[in-house]
Amino acid sequence: MELPGESLFFLRIKPGEVETASKELRKHPKVSRAETLLGPYDIVAPVNVRNTEELRNLASEMEAKPFCEGCSIIPSISTWTREPAVTRALSAWSLIHATDSKGVAEALKAIENINAVYETTGDFNVIANMAVEELGALHDTLVGQIQKIKGVRRTETLASLERSK
Image 1 (cartoon, rainbow, N blue to C red):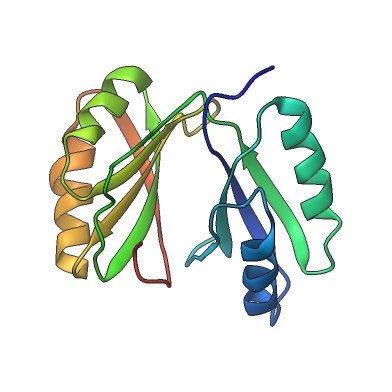
Image 2: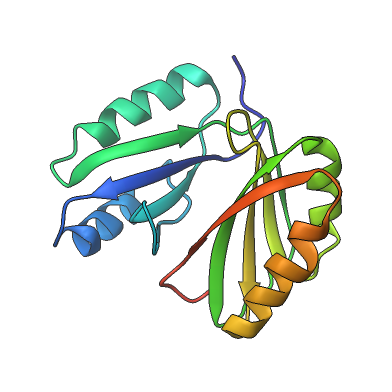
């Protein structure tokens, strides 16, 4: 099956190995970037693969790395990215459970702090990457805008430990 855009890997990394894992992932030709996270996952890595077979092979490759304790692979049905991307001090990933994923994805594109929107399948069917200047702006974007979009049922947000790009 063909994949239309970037897919996402959320990885759990062995303690003490996050920096090594990030450096190695950034060198991989199919990984567009690797961001260290706070939360149940240690790194998010958007990946560029053409189809589900390539995605499966890349997942097997990641799982075999000595630093990897596990990963969640999230194939993207569609991907939108803001050009040029907003660069701010903080970056975060919001995993969204929506009753109307298309409508929520469209509404997210109108929010100034959103850099990317991924429509996916599963428990979280929309994922948004956002960039803000400070924690208050993250709160305002998440609680004041994202959670008020019609069709958003639940959000889980993971803050990035890296400057937004």
